[in-house]
Every structure is written in structure tokens, then in C-alpha cells.
Image (tube, rainbow, N blue to C red; front, side, top):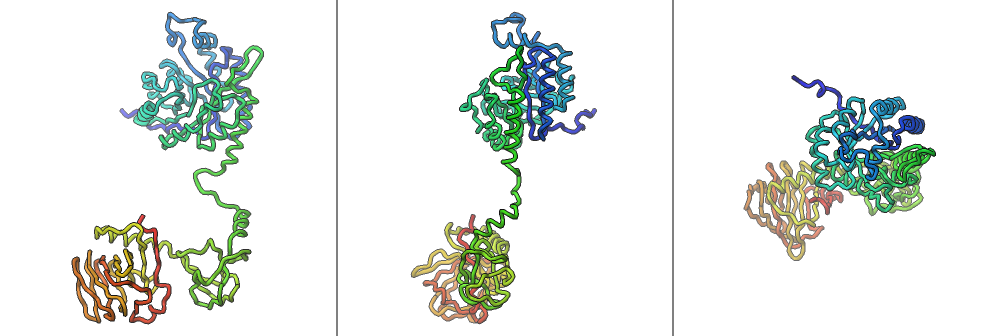
Length: 509
């Protein structure tokens, strides 16, 4: 039969969660315990946090060996025995915890206490550091459908890995607390960087900070928040003439200072998990410090505005293009005449963004190179030739990598499927094409030649040549020295186009 409990909503922990740990600070006096809960309930209502109030359960008749019952010479046996509360008293405390709006949380130190936690309706179960690898107790805890938080003081990484795996395999809602088991913990021993260690090692778990420092310390909780902890635990109590506090438990006033520091830390840390939207004042201040683009020469309407056509200076005028807008992936064309020395304004230009187009080309080239199984030098610059503009690159264009250009020259040329290279000739350069991959259709002085892998064709100076491919092709061009002004296209419009190349140095990664 299907267990209906498996269909119930899974219980989760609110974030951030601040935990007041009563431990034995009720002093075995239920009325004093109720006073502590009441005073901290009033305190918590002043903060927009989620809160839990935590007890500790031990079935002392079985937890302490029969031969050691009531031994006052053993520290913890004396402490636990003197602060014993019966079941009715702990149920009164639990009811008070819930009536104050706290989540009820408890640390069991034996299996019988786990049953009490379930029967008394607690919301969260805590594993103390001393019990972190108490496997009989862990088996009992894992049988309970409650969120579980484990403290990790003194626990080795291998043991943490085992317990985390144990909880994950049982689909437990599990969180870890960075913790140091010194009472109180001196500031030089707090080891807050362990929060980072736990977050890195267990990125899918919520990580908290269980604190035992001097109760007057407020810096550690702010640092823990900045490090990304989302659960915070502190021992608390109410000092009286009869019941003074120990050295690591906070009074209401100290807890208030602790919570004030936490609240201030959240304000200082600000938005988490996403980039903030800058304020108008921030943007205005930044813009005032940016250099504006000014025309170095008169620029006519319809002209492409190049880097050499402008200079950058302050003060930047309203609506002016800035140096921050300028890149090889953003093209500007004058929409009206711009006099020399005048600001280059948004209203006077047309802007075209080509980054996505260039990156798409690079992706296609890298894919074809991978298919060809060719090896490309890591520092080689990629030259994208777009004879009639990037918008027609798929039809007309090539990409090439210059491997060396000295007295001799070697290039690796990539032609994507369906691309054509317009007809051109060289007056100085003699070149040889060696096809490495795919099929290349070569036109030499108007005569067609089909070249496959392994084909070698030499082209003398003055020979008009064009090429295209249906399949995509990769070939080596081995030549005499290449000169930038030694390429002459049959289509005069290409010769007059100074913006037909885009160069990329870092493209292989």
C-alpha cells in the first residue's frame, strides 16, 4: 500500500532563520524557562526574520549509565541532572514556544528523544556536533519527516561526506552549520571561512553558522551573512540573581545587538542572486566621468564613422556617444553632417550591433575546422572578409588565419557551405592552394576547376581567380609575401569598401 505520508508537502526551512538555543538555560525551572521564551518572543517581534526556539532532549534514565546516575563529580551528569524537566514541563515550554510564534526546534541526544520530538509536534530537528556520526541515532532521525540541521564542529570532511550522502539518499531536507566547539570561542578561533568551505563542498545544501563566541560580539554574524550563511544559532537566556548566564549565552539586550548587527548586515549586503539595477543618480555620475566622442574632421552624412575619425574627451554632452559605446562590434554611420570638433550624438548617427553576427561566424568556422581535423596556432588572428557587408557574409565572404607572413606566407582559409569569394587578382603575389577538406570550385580566368582534398593549384600573379563551395572547404594558401594593397577585385565596389574586414585575436577559446 502507498504510504500517504509520502504525498504530503515536504517541510522546508525559511531563510534566513535565527535560532535561539535555550539548551539547559531553563535551569530545570519551568517558570524560568517560560520567562525566557516570553522575553525573547517580545524581542523577535521587532525583526523581519524567521525565528526558531530550540530545546534539548535527553532521556536521562537511559542516557546516563545506571552506575553513574546522580554523580555530581562528573560535569555533564551533574549539569543535566540538576536541570532535568519532566515531560509535562517540556510540553509547557513547547506550547509557549509556538504561542510566541517561534518554530519549535529540538536536539535529541538519544533515540527515545526523537520519538518525543515527533509526539510533541516540533518543526525542526537538530543534530549536535557530538552526535554527527552517531549512526544509530542518525538512523532514527532519518526515519522522521522533519527538516534536519547538523552542526559540524570537529567533524572531518570524510565523515561529513558520508552523513550528507546518507541524508541525500533518504531525500532528507538537510542543512549544515559551521561551528566551533569551544565555550566561549575566542575571536581568533571562530574560523568563519569554514562557511566558504561548506558552501563550496556542498553547493546544494543550505549552510548556517552556529555561534559560541562572547555574547557581546556582533561582527561575526555580519561576516557570516556576507559569506552567504542563511541559518544562525545563538545560546540565550535571561540572567537573574538565582540564575546567572554562562560565558557564551546572550541576554535579551545582547541578542538585540546581535540581531541589529544582522539586520544592518543585510542592508549593507543588499540584493543577492542577481545584478542590481543602477540608480539614476549612479548612472548620471558615471556618465559625467565618461569621455565623449567628438569629430576629428568633418564627417558627411552616410559616412561610416571610424575610430580614426573621432577623439574622446570630457565634458560629455547630453545625448553624446561615449568611449564606452565604442567597440569593433558596434558600427556607427553619420545620419547627418557632423562638423569637425562637434560632439557625435546619438541623434546624428545610426548604430549597428554586430557582436552576435561575428560570434555566429566564429562558431561556424570553428565547427568546420573541427570537422577538417585541422590544427590552428593558438595565437593566430582570425580575419573575417565580408566583401559586401556582414549581412551578406553567408553569400560572399571567407575567413582566414595568417600563420606566417615573411618572405613567404602561409594562410589557412575557411569557406563555409554556400559561400563565394569574388573574383580578384594580385600583381605581386604568387600563391598555391592546397585543399585539406571539402570540395572547392575554383575559377581561373573564368575557367572552372573542381578541387578536392589533396588538390594543389598554383596561381600566378595577374591570374583572375574566384572560388566557391557547396560543402564547405578548408585549404592552405602558400604564397610569396602578402601585401595589403596587392588585392584587386573585378567588382570596383569591393575595392572602394574600406570596411570589408573584421579582425579577431582571441577567438579559439
